[in-house]
Image (cartoon, rainbow over all chains, first blue to last red; front, side, top):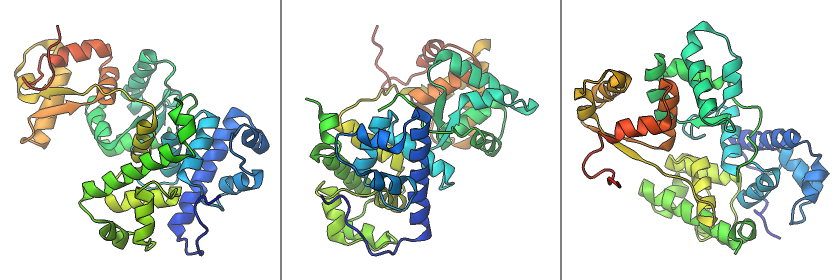
Length: 173
Length: 167
């Protein structure tokens, strides 16, 4: 077994930040499904030791991409979404994360008067696709949408970041 | 053939990911040594080569390093690799001739005209806008119209070569 050889510890702060962000996101996705760590590991085809998995969640061990995809598959979440959400929550850049992920239910729960058009958008969005309550908006899309919502792109982005989903959405991948 | 489940830890996926990494690098116009020179971790060129050939599995941290160096979006690179391993996504790009839309006079198209004017004000050179499926969805929701209605409205302004009329 050689899944990503061990490296001498030269990991920078950003490395640690990433590893921790991925771990945090895995934990969120797992607890959303309601499984224990052994419960998750037992469902996997490959024999991943519970300890190794625990190290991923605790952000002390680097996970390979195929491994991440495999875990996400078992959890029923899309790996790219989980990765993007980890980057978003860690504040590692809008473009690197591929945009902002938004929980439409959180938008609707907000009651700031100036964001009423945004709520209308969220309501329409949910009506059009009721099962898709978490969506992703990239930089260009935020610019377009801001025009329609009569907000500046910066304002809209700021508002949207407050609606970051609690965990990667179920049902994809 | 269950390429997806078979391929995740196995070769298919790792190779698809390697292929995507190579494309990402080539899009930036760099050789393998150009890229490693720009990565803070001083990855060995040979290691990068084995990632691209799908021989060695790369970690999340490595993927992100490569993406940051090349300006690519990591979730998209990963999604494309998964896509090539199995799944397919919908692509419904629509092209809109912005000047044609600006010159229209129908009341119901006023918000769209405002958008088109805005686009042109920001970038007068690009007179054709491309809207993908997700952009269309957001705009429809913002305007409170059905997606199909919006598409029908915008299709009128498609450039001659953009979208083939299929009826």
